Image (cartoon, rainbow, N blue to C red; front, side, top):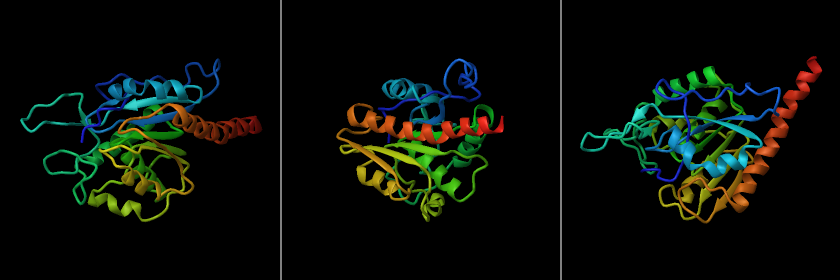
Length: 252
């Protein structure tokens, strides 16, 4: 499964460091810090470039940090693009398909360590956002957080073409409802991650916000979908940052 239509940026040992959020804090209003996760066969910088419309739309409320998955995707002939990445593999030949059920989750622990280190270095983050395999990953992290398995926290999640992982080791994460503000966007014509797969993930969340578009496998951001992002982030912004400002004022 190749996510041809998505976008990203990145902090890793061989990538550019993301901008610090406090450089102009005294001059500009605070923004929500969101960590963004790309799809299979993509990387942070590619994902960032492809979701320019999304970044522009949410810029009023959010600052995005993009990271690249730790695992290089190798082709059958042994060749591979260094920029083609995966968060984990669910087949023994080191490939990934969102429709694969019952497979392993090879390299998943490496991804967990990368995220933990990223949060330590560039966080904390208010929320996580993911596309396709990246959205699947955010769903797993939300489920792990619900169970108290993460050494960090995030307060909301945005999913584009999300789905449940079919890997056996992830199955147990989906056995309880997830109490986390969430926005789920998916395409009615998506053939890579059919809408039924996205809808299955949505059922795990309490009070999810759902926005369906008529397109396929990409991060949509126009018309009612753009409005859904802005409405969701406005509400989150009011709940999180306004509360933070009130708490600071009370402490002072």
